[in-house]
View 1: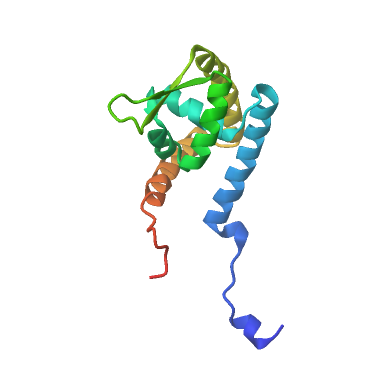
View 2: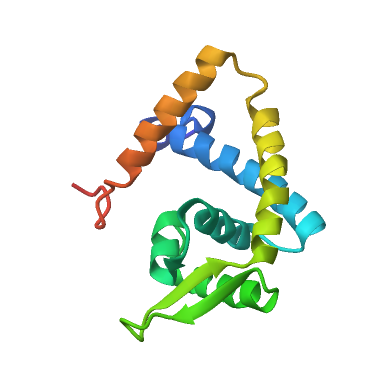
Length: 159
């Protein structure tokens, strides 16, 4: 090792929280995606739109993007596919013709009713290794981190 190697900052990825969260989320997303693709023939964006509409009711495409933390292009692609599958309706807002409103169809609600128990089982499996107290702590910590990540400056952390 050269002398300059000793002066380089060291990072231990296994102890770096953003890395840990990213890997954990990536693994869970892949497992959920595999389940949804195999069982329902759709992917995470469609699932997120379904769940967002199920929780909030009819929303504009922009609101769905905001609430689901997806970019508008991804929402646009997924909503077209979902409309083709008759899971949602897309209507033009009478008050603002540039705005589209997404809403679940009966078929979409049927998928939601089927998916929720699958999603719950997946979440329960993940949390099975935690005590009740650890689950409460995890929920509290994740809520705080979610709020904090909403405050990340657009320009980054170069200050």
